[in-house]
Image (tube, rainbow, N blue to C red; front, side, top):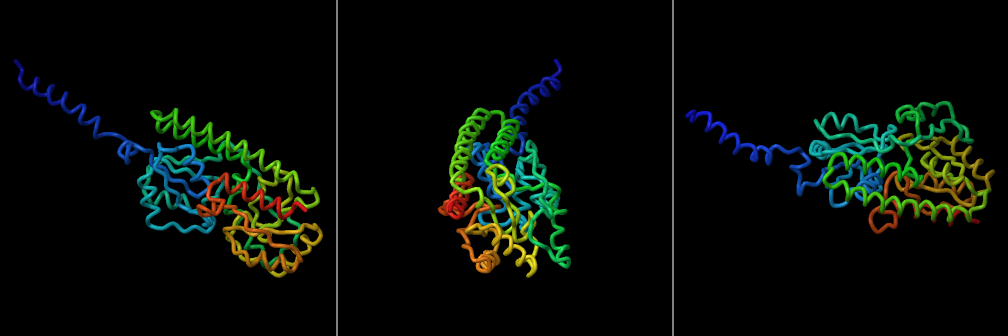
Length: 324
C-alpha cells in the first residue's frame, strides 16, 4: 500500500475547504461581505447608496458643499481607493485629479464611469453674450483641461436615470449574489427620479418665457437648460470653478446682459463665493436669489442633502425667483 499517496490525498482533501474559505476576493474579505465602493463626489455618492443599499460599504471623496473642481486629495483618500472594490466616477474630465490619485494608491479597484451611456453636451465655449478681455483669455483655457464636453450631467434627472442603470449593472456584475436587491433598489429609485422630472417640469412651467435665463457663477446648468427650456449665462464663462473672478470688463458685460434680459434675479452656488454674484446683482439692480446647489449636495438637513432634494430645491428656487 502506498501510504505516501494516501497521505497526500487526505491532506489535499482537508486543504480544499480551507483554501476556499481563505482565498476569496477583496470584496469577500470586506466587512459583512459588502462591496467596498468609492464615489468621487457627493451627488454620485447618493446615487450609489440608493442602488447599493445594504449591499455596499460606501465612501465619498468630495463631500457636501465641497468643490470637485478644486479638490486636493489627502493621504486618507489613497487608503480609501487602495481598499475599494469599485470606484464610481463621473467621467467627462470632471475629476481631473482622479488618475493620479488612483495610480498613487496602488488600487486594483474597477473604475466605473457612470456617464458612458449618455450623449453629453459640448462645452458652450464663447457663446456667452458678455465680452471677455484679452488678458483674461488664459484664465478660461481650463475648458481644455476639462475635455470637450460639459460634465454636469446630473442637472437633468433623465440623465441620472442612465447613471443609476450603470451603477446597477456594475454592482450586479461585481456581486451577483445580491443582484435582485440591486435591481429592486434601482427600479424603485428610477421611479422616484421620473416623478422628480415631472415635478420639475410642473414648477418651471410657471416661469414666463422671457424670464427663462439663468445667470449663475459658472457654467453648470447646461443640461437643466436643455431639458427644461432655459438659456444660461455665467460670470466665469467656464464649466470649471477654477478660473479667477471675472474682470471689470466681464462684469460690466454680464451686467448689461442681465439688464437687457429683464430677469428679476440671478443665482449664486454652494460651491462658489456668493460675493461676486451679489456685487453683480447690486450693479444690475436685481435680486440675488437663494443659493443653488450645483456640483455638490448640501449638508443633511439643508433640504438639499440628497440628489432628489437638491434638484427639487433648485427647481423651487428658480421658479420662485423667476416666476414673475
